[in-house]
Figure (cartoon, rainbow, N blue to C red):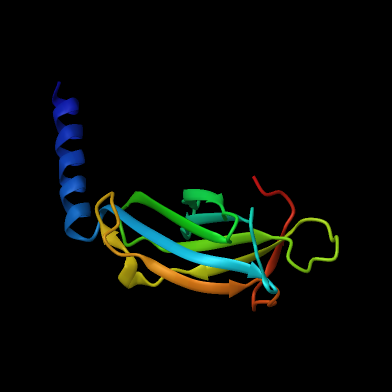
Amino acid sequence: MRSLTLILLLFTVVAVNCSLIGGGHQSVRVIGKLRCGHKPASGVRVKLWEEDTGPDPDDLLAQGYTDAQGNFDLQGSEFEVGQIDPVLKIYHECNDEHKPGSRKVKFKIPKRHITRGKVPKSTYDLGEINLETHFPGEEREWITS
C-alpha cells in the first residue's frame, strides 16, 4: 500500500511539473494547395508529423491526400512534455520520370501556430506549392504507408 501511495504521489508531481514547463496537449493545423506545373496535384499523400529527438520516435499527427484541386487540410494533437516540433511531409511523383519510390519534401511548421489543447486555434497556411521545384534537403521515400 505504501509503495502504491508513493507511485501515485510521484506521478502527480511529474504531471504537475510537466504542465508547468510546457507539457500537455498541443495541437497544430496546416492547409495548402499543391500543383505539378500548371495542373493541380491531386491524390498526393500529405502527413503531419511531430518530430522528436533521441529515443522517442516521431509521432504521426494526421495524414491524408490532396483533393481534385490539390488542396489539403490537416490537423492533429499530441501530449508532449516540451513544445512539439510539427512538420508537414509531402510524398509525390511530380516530374519523377518513373523512378522508384516517391519524392519526399518536408516543411517545418512555425512555432507560433502551435496551440495548447487538443483543438488548434491557429492555422498555418503553407500557400500554393509547385512540386516541380526540387527543394533543398529533398529525399526519396521507398515505402509510403
